[in-house]
Image 1 (tube, one colour):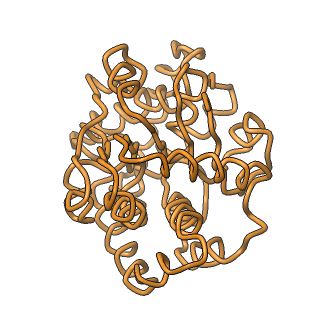
Image 2 (tube, rainbow, N blue to C red):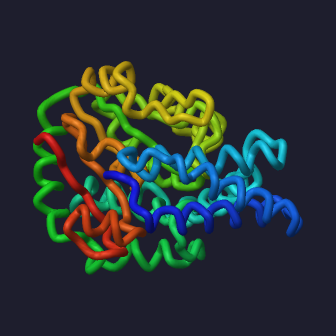
Length: 287
């Protein structure tokens, strides 16, 4: 996906949210907003919204002189997510009539824990999404059958692109289940990128008990998700599952075999996927 003018408004909302998370005063807010606005005038709109998010967020980090403006928020999201997954329990999910479906939906609803789009982060909403089958997109079941067929073909090398802190606790369930047969590599961000999960989050969530942890490179606030080296790495997997809107925005047009799993929290992403806002999407590309 390309970046749209509408994205600028969303970037500025994110900037103010990050400043509020760090108790910035009004003078600092004005400085950051004006600097970010000027920087975005030179933005490459052919890049995805997710790639371009480094422009305004790098200014937040530099003005505040902190490496990770979302560090505190990520700690809180991990804590709350851990509380919820403990209540849900693993055994009941895998004993469902279709464990893959149940585990995918559980992983997907964790995608609600996001500081990118303007969504209510009340975790009660996660339980509502988990139990409402009406939120599944029209192609969900068709693509679920494709995925079931692929993972039943024998031991696979699976690359799993993670998304947010907190959400990573919900991914752990499906990673654990897949790891019984398959070899999993779970990708987190190399450096801070909004509230995306990093290596420390993967360890806190226990994902490293079931998967090898690798990183999506970030150099000087530039996301290298589409770099030739990283795309080549993805092509070496038998199966790739990518979580969240950002991975879809950035990789959706690439010639890759990927299953995208996300909630459409942005109307532009929903339109690109030919569905409605607020839907749980399992989208296959290249299969």
